[in-house]
Image 1 (cartoon, rainbow, N blue to C red):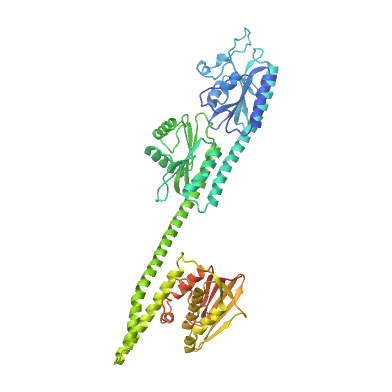
Image 2 (cartoon, rainbow, N blue to C red):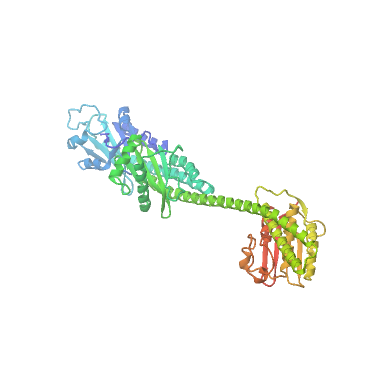
Length: 598
């Protein structure tokens, strides 16, 4: 009797998850052999699925039987109840029609329209002849059912022997086909996971939306899903809270379903499991029966037969959920697919967490850039506003100093005010220069600059201050020009600030050495002194604006705390770098690396 119960949903034909045509052809060939050699008009081969049902995969001998049976599912437990009444014919089990439950028999999907012979061994349309196909571990992997004997009689011993041989072949073929199917499924899902991991790992700058967009196609294809939804939770103000379909469109779900999905995802993540929601399945621990019925009603309304629901997360945090959909009658979700979906939930969760971290960093960088721009604008504005009245003050001081009949006390006060005004002018000039070299809209217009000449000019300008302290300044440089690419005024300021600092912080009678040279594609300018040195703690902040050393000897020297900050900004905007090597009481060496002119 080649029949299967129509109790379950009908799968698409050919089976979408079946690995390839050779596997289908092997089962079909065995079924056809039964009809051509063993003397039966119809044969069907079914495979066991993870949901406890047998799915008909190959039917031979009758177009009507093939159309009606292919893809139908029979509950294994129902079939086994009937086989408890069967005669044991080796691999075959035979249940005469008189032993079958009449109510069950009426539900079989296909019954041949024949009149039994008037013989004791006549074949009845409701007779059941089936081989249960097991693997080497005794696990049921499928069945082969036979119907409609050509001679109209129940098979004799010789016919049973032939049928048992075909049953052995069918068993091996079903095991092989299922193994190939499982391998193909794992390969397909692994490929989907690989695409997701690859997009996440190569997308260091990806936003959450971009990662989801990159993942949708891979997931829908990998799981052979009709559609897909991804929702991220808006817990920290950075999640989208939106739900995206596999075609990239944003969809709207009733608030009740959104709440069910969020609570179910958190429970599923804590349990590390997925949930399948379908009409013929009991609801799992992540949703209640009432919630499940509400979900099913929604699925019915949009024409979806089942969903595979997987949580997305990283560590202890649930970040969203993934919903894969299939149409009514499509294959049910397998354990392999469920496990793969959970693994992908981990991969997507980590990718989403990384993307959110990048978005936070990007937002912070933008805020810092905006703050830096505001600071530069503020410094520039304040400096300009101070410069004009200060110029007037200095001018009037000069006028007062030329006045007649000024006593010594008044002249001393005017001199003190002039010194203060000049110091304030230097601070304003430094602030304006700091704003200029820190402005990203003010690029360097590079030109070849001879640093040898720049160093000579700076040494000449600081010779008076060095002579007052009896310092020796030496210059070590190659014969001829040492040419770097940059802005002449700014590079002169770099050299002047380094040399003047060396002179300022070096005690009387010692020396300052300036060296120039080449290192690879760079020009190296080094300024070494025998001064008070800089502590390791202070070196960390040495190039920050307005930083003054904690060393009392350094604090005793006048300064704005802007000189080295200006040097650092200029060197950075010239695509160079600056290094410092210093020890308290022994001196410091500052090295500046700048691109050499070709």
